[in-house]
Length: 453
Image (tube, rainbow, N blue to C red; front, side, top):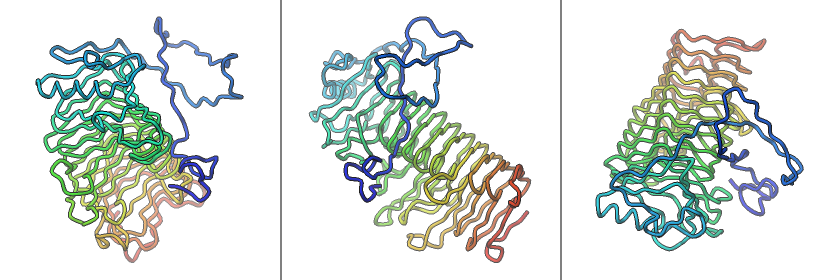
């Protein structure tokens, strides 16, 4: 989004823009003996700290453990000239090692260190497809993208069928959101492939989304922070391709903080020509979304047999804790989704009128203007929304909403908006801690949205 008066780049608030990121994380490894449990830690501004002041919002302490060791029968990127000391470019050496490993049916080892990738020589982007690539750990092995700005080349890391990528951090010098553009932003990883892939224990920072398509892929035990786009986006690629179907992808046990769009999203797109197939079988399980600056904590935008289960969302800045429906005029409708066991805290920030959970459907200009959003929500906790706990917008919706808890919304517990069309089964829900004058359930579409309680 570039606003009038943004004279430098779209995300520069000093030039009239709106920032995609608000916070910034600084991972620091503390050497020496571990800090004992219960210790008091003091932050002190020393003479070398020259800023007028520093804002510190939170501190996380983590027992990182020892670096992982080199797997047997692996090829090391250092042997092909990669530099773990961050002094010279390692782009060509890393890609050469991957290509050799693919030919020799071996794996790739990226030892402890920080590897600079700022060259426009060699592959663009780094392509790890079909190879197992392992680092010494997300705190120990970093691939840092520093292309000359304005950037002229993609910098994402490509993951394809039969790829295993683990135990690395991916960071960059990107300065604003423009995928593959002059600001240097690009996907953390871009995964596709019709025969499955695995990504585990990676950490992406200052990148755009981790863009996940294909069939049978899994991302687990990973994290992203300070992104310019979604944290993890399961999608079907936007155009027909056997490698971009977006079927049976699992995103499980991951952590996202300060994302520049939805923290965890599923996006099914019919494409510009309307010929891209429906995304099916996405599973978003046991993830944590903290302080997304743009958009929602969780987002379901179309698809079939979608499952969001046991996720935590907290401190949403701009949109809803969760939005369920469709994205854009080419987005496929939501044929079926189950949302269960999630804890959704907050919702409704600065970006328009939002709620704790918002249910939408295709608009009048959609390829599917009469399609319904179909969703079952059960066993969820919706707490502390700054507007309604649950809002069903002017839309076509068929939903089941049972055994949920709505706690302390600023306005209605459940609000069916005027003009909503469809049916709802609402049973055994608990709405508590309402403010004076607010309704547990307000149906402003009684003639067109039929409730069963």
